[in-house]
Amino acid sequence: MRVKVSRKAHFNAAHRLYNSEWSFEKNEDVFGLCNNPNFHGHNYELIVSVTGNIDPKTGYVIDMKVLKDLIKSEVENAFDHKNLNIEVPEFKKLNPTAENIAVVIWNKLRPHIAEVNDLEIVLYETPRNFVTFSG
Ligand code: NI
Image (cartoon, rainbow, N blue to C red; front, side, top):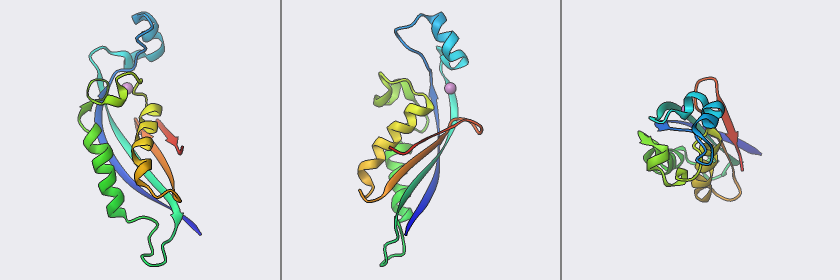
């Protein structure tokens, strides 16, 4: 019996979307406002879900306190109030789109989640735009 448990989190971060191999005009065409050279911010909403069997001893799939602390140390401390392009090493050469941010978060959390459990990341860049990555 596998159960999915989820924890919501939140961070604010700035980014700029562009491809350094393209001209400014081409970047404007593809990324529009997100290509603003002076950066802009988003209020990211994150849902981290772990799916697994219920431990008969605890009744938990994963201790929510453990999951909360993990998200804090791996994601919030690394991303919150940061400029993703400049201050977060993973995005030095990777465009910080919602897609890529979700994959980076998954890769940061995956080693800390028991191998028998599945991990899913849902990342909202705006209330209407969100991406899902589960490995
Ligand atoms: Ni943006």
